Amino acid sequence: MSDDKTVVPFVRQPPAIKPERPCFGVYQGWVQNEKGARLKPGVYWHSYQRTKDDDGDAPGDDRDRPVRDDWIATPVLVEARTLNSDDGTEGRLLRLATHGGDKEWTMPMEMLGGSGEEIRRALFAMGAVIAPRQRPRFLEYLLDQQPGQTIATTSRPGWHASGVFVLPHRTIGGEGVRFQSSGRAPDLFRVRGELAQWQALVGARCVGNPVLTLAVGCALAGPLLNLVKVNGGGVHLVGDSSKGKSLAQLVGASVWGDPGPAGFGASWCMTKNGLEIEAASRNDTLLSLDEIKRANPKDIQEMAYSLANGCGKGTMNREREGRAKLSWTLLTLSSGERSLSEHAALSGDPAHAGAELRMVDVNAGTRTHGAFDDCHGLDGAGFHRLMTGAVGEHYGHLGPAFVEKLIAGNDRDGLLEAFAKVRAHFQSDSAQAGRVADRFAVVALAGEMAIAYGLLPWTVGNSLADSLLLYREWLERVGSGSAEDRQILASLARFIERHGDSRFSDVHAGETDNRVTNRAGYWEDEPNRRLFLFNTSGLQEAAHGFGLARIVTALDTAGAIAKRDIEKDRTRNTKKYRLPGGGSPKGLYVIDPERLEMAGADDNKHTGT
Image (tube, rainbow, N blue to C red; front, top):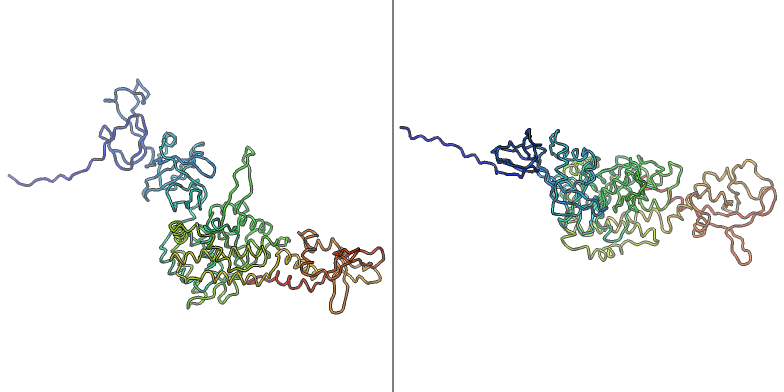
């Protein structure tokens, strides 16, 4: 007789279920139905096999009836009802169990109004599987669910009215709000690598490089703009190609996500509507736009205004009802070999001073090493390669960590006072320069806060000093006073330079000079100078885009009107001359071009070009 015993392995039976057929069921693991059949994870339609006497779903004695369990899809649970705080539309928060782990998606209910193809595409992209023959029933399943919980959603990243900061895959500062998207938009806020590695390989090497610290500060300033009441706008890195401008943009974009062109980075090569979408999708963060030469010169000024103003154009739907405008608050980090004014001039439309103030030029081409001041012991090419590789391996950490610290420390209440202290370092003598000073000051504040939080390996005062340096460089280039005045005076100086010999003639000549066509005026020689006497149409043409009164104001402020008539105790802006060929005296605007030269030189002096 043998003492050997056969060991039978223990097999754990899956949980038993007894659904109240007909009904839907969803299971995240294997289960066993009331007949002992094992069912794999997924969404099911539980019913009965059809017979000759019923339709398969009729109630009755089910002890001997064959059951039917139709597998519809991999596990998709309807967790909550959602209410979009942007427009009041409803949705459903879905949780998917996939091979890649659990994933969430806030599905707009309006997507159930059609065939459901958009829903299936979005779910397939996230790893769900839906049985081909069960697609209509899957939509029935979604409609059948009545979750008891209701949560808020928003279609915009950034600050929510509840005080939390919403990103596509996380909410900082609370759990009561979710991000809602169509499921088709790319994930801009991707994360890779480690914050500590970004700090060591990228952040530490920004020290000594004002253009790089500016890029990081611009990215971190996005969440502060609304809190310190500063308008959006941008900085434009100007310099020749291969000088390091694009690296600065990669560094800035890496604060929030993948800095590559398929991620957080973007290009000027898009329509105005496309730009609005890109800006809204990065609300309260950073918009990085590479290569201004790829933008349409006719649109560039309007695009600069739109980015700074934070609001898109209104549109209508098929029923001619107004759609909600896209909106955003952010700083733009732009780059190009041309300044905004130079690019706009390609279309024949001189840049408006307001557009130039909203996209401020920064020297990123003629520093010690192109865009860099300190390559940390490397040559320019080696520094560029090292930094480019580092931001490609470690990104998406610093921005969210900055917001976490901001919320956790309850620092929002004291931000206005902190901003005022930083802003006091940025002196400005006009309202226009003040707007630019605000921008550099909020960049400095963001950097100094990140240093205090231990997120940037820079010494205290580093961000403030670099922002002040770049701001003062800008002030030195543009000078003081009104930007519109400088633009008007520079336009007049260029007009005289181009047409001084062809559209003007000697006002004291005996006869009319018939060689002059499309006359803009005359000239008058005095010892050591020549004055240009503009007629009204010539003056308005020379400063195209400005009204006559505004042109005269700029000339008067600059002291460029050399002679005037005084009539009955009233000083006029013109002086009457008897013109060649006879006739009644005519009032002309007498301009001293020497008073225009400095303004013209400042206007044409663009950093790095």
